[in-house]
Image (cartoon, rainbow, N blue to C red; front, side, top):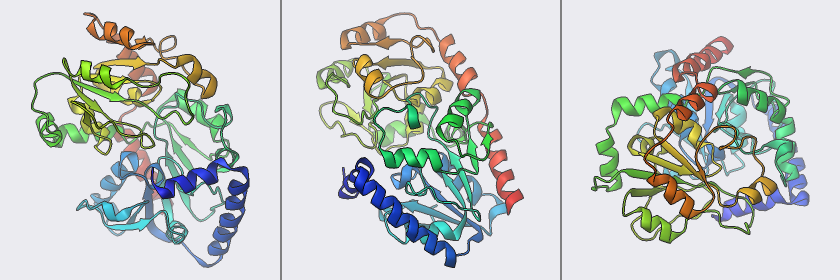
Length: 381
């Protein structure tokens, strides 16, 4: 974890520093608002609060930069470390860790994000349009339902004003009504990230992905995606190195950790923390995760999903979930490594569960979301 992230965590987790940050930066933004008028055709994009160039904001960016209707728009990316992103399609980049970030934010009429774009300062923005594509179906609790949430983050959930918040369907629409009470309009047209699946399938072959990752084996691919706990767990939370090595005898094992997690860098396991999750989906035969909502997006492929939750009881008490994956969704869950091995070796798998999950929680197409986003931008310009 970098120094900047450690400072951010200290501010978020301290009542004193959190309050000081909210008051100081909030006042700074209000002063800037007196002097900065937004460019009516400027859009600012940010992914995971500046940590990545990925997900729905990236899909929205590429869609708009290739659309003649938006050829005269200024498209700006905000990143914590803009210099490390050298993709040829990237135009203007700004640092989201710099105080000047708020100048670029206020200068842009439209904001496109998949988490916080306002650096946890939920200020009024009457001359701007805040468009939120949350980064997943809410499986883990959020807002007031989340146990041990810092006051600064809770204040943001309670007061942030999204002008438009895109949802997968009825389930997350109802949840987000509770989590983000000041949202002006919830847009039930699905998530634009679903177009990533279609675009990759049309332009990238699985063979190319395997080549980029150095995979030469014909063994089936197992993708392991554990999530971040956010607390010092007393129980086992992830697969041990010994089990990963054992799985490598049967599978090509790829580990992709949460952006707050430490990477696995031992043995035969391929680490792909900075590789596109949706490219990994293309070559994955089996997905293993725990309490991550990533399986909602992977279910559309109709490939096996298993959940490994050895700390089930502790996680429910210390973090909290809205849905029990086994009871509510019917997914196979292992509570020990031995149980997981047994599930993986079983001859049968209930693929209908995957179809039901996609139908209930992720039924809208990416094109539906794309049309809705363009309509918002065109009608409010």
